[in-house]
Image 1 (cartoon, rainbow, N blue to C red):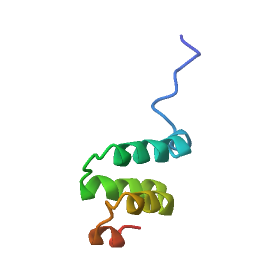
Image 2 (image 1 turned 90 degrees about the vertical axis):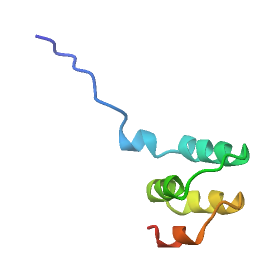
Image 3 (image 1 turned 120 degrees about the vertical axis):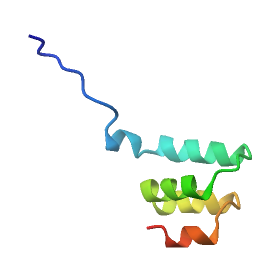
Length: 68
């Protein structure tokens, strides 16, 4: 039997990091037009820091006010 089982996927702690916010900022800075649904996912995952970045690049939409 194998004792060293690999850990599945990436942990939430590893995903929720400054690297994720940097990735969001790079996408917005490149002029990418990101859908409202995807921006909402960013806000759900990263909260107000993501909201600030989205506003900085004028991609914030009224629908995003409802996202917690």
